[in-house]
Image 1 (cartoon, each protein chain N blue to C red):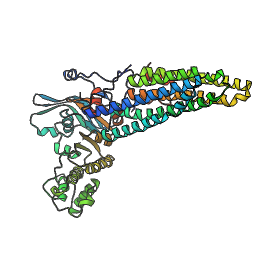
Image 2: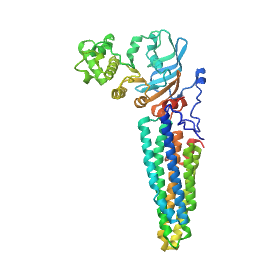
Image 3: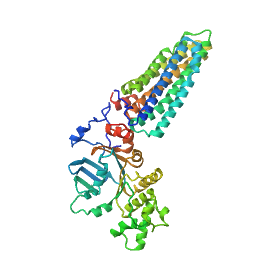
Image 4: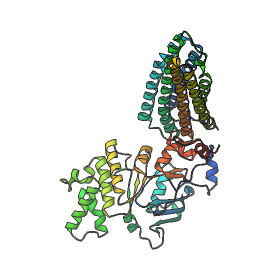
Length: 238
Length: 288
């Protein structure tokens, strides 16, 4: 269920260009954040300290893009007084960029934890436990950005549906880590770090859900935040 | 919102964009909620022709009591023509023919016994260009009450004039120059004088045909503020080219296109989630 934004059909060509620039800035920011998440996960799993450090310090680019996109939105609101789908796009993007920025923060957090875990000379295999969780979350984020790029409500809903599984997986992982902690009390500190990483990844999944909700708002005009998955499905008949 | 049906899901919310199809089918459907539970005026199946040319096709719309309804649409869409049918201003155009039913408080305003002078006292009008009479400010406002015999002596007339000027937010600016010509005021003041003149005869409905298009933003803001205040006592139908103005002052918005009433809905719905593609294209500035 894709719907064109028709952002190229305004009488004002300049307006068309501004909306297109805005959209592509969000996709650039999304791509950057996606890359950060993948690298954070890779650093955690492989114990690559250099990669971990670069991820931990890379969120300044995302922050800059957040400021730039917010300024673009303010500019369009002030000068174009957008209405209907254009208005919804600007409003949705304002909310999306703050979610993307938080995803960037969470990825940087995973990077910082990965640096500390990489220090451990006696590296344990279960430091890479969050790999599966992280892959699921990365796929969600990628899907959310695709849903935005294609204005695809069905895809957005299917991404929202995946969050339950991520939450379950996070809980399972926490239980597993608790068992390890009981077995090896001297490693509790690092295991808490692994748990923090899992927590950060789980939060990224939540932000991906928020992105999808904005896509639904943008396309359909209905605000589905704080609805259950069933309610969202009922409202959008899928 | 309760009168507005939920749009269907799955992209079926917008109707096809074939305008010719609409023009050929006189039984097109207006989308949204053209009818209200407590109408002040009702229009049913209104058609207006200028000679052979049909200017309005099958428009049915209620104007709710104490609401501000905005009518928007591109030039030549029939919004002004429709507004003028509501107090029979089209009667003065010889080639103009109106069919359909229009009522005010349930009474047929096109009935044989209807006195158009009385009708226009109940349904007043403010025009695009301020058009004060070439008389004093006082006389501009006093003219209507005098011909309708609303004041029995000078004191009563003074009161009506002052009250009308106050309600039009003009009194303080002109109280020391009531005997000066109305045409000597600024454009915004002249327009407020015209509004004072319209409300001096205690109308029930005020029709406004682009009342701010000749005014600067500050004068516009004052008129809009005034519309907001007047809504407590009057019903207002306003035609405007400024979509921001429609969005600011009205509770409901009606979108006209090629003489047809395409969509009517609560203003916030029309401006955030219009249901017809033509409405969407117009309010977002897309060419269609």
